[in-house]
Image 1 (cartoon, rainbow, N blue to C red):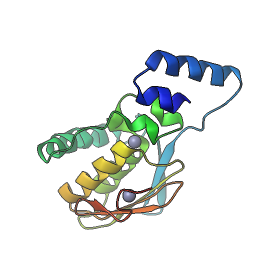
Image 2: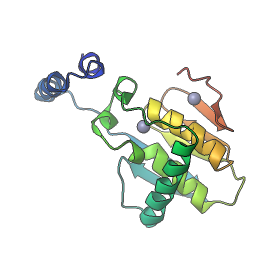
Image 3: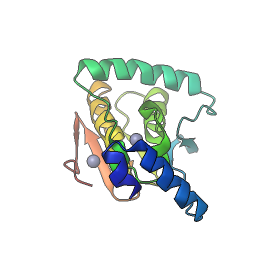
Image 4: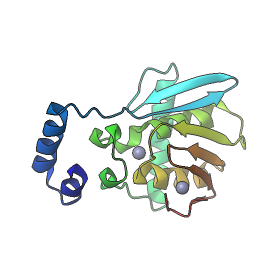
Length: 164
Ligand code: ZN
Ligand code: ZN
């Protein structure tokens, strides 16, 4: 129900529905992503700034986002429909956990190393679109294993054919 209201832009209704869910004890799972680099696992929550290289990660994402926009990327603010759990509350699309993990993967590994990220929830439409652009701009193969399936991003396309 919350998703139907959200897609129609009825944010007050969404807020009310969420409040009711909360009161009824419906607890949403927090979204997180992780990546293993040189045998060390790095975990990110949405908007996470706790990583030692957080500043670099955010700067890199800022640069990427400029280049993505030049290439025609438009942030998808209707992501609520696909991202049905915790992250839907997050307004700032740039800092979804899978984007943070992908960014670290790119800055912390040598060029051409494939990036492999795992996520405990389904990846949202915006992250999916963004990672397609990132695979092309950074010239990396990016594999995202979300709660539903594998996505293999390469040269601006995903192996799922945008269906997941
Ligand atoms: Zn996302
Ligand atoms: Zn995909």
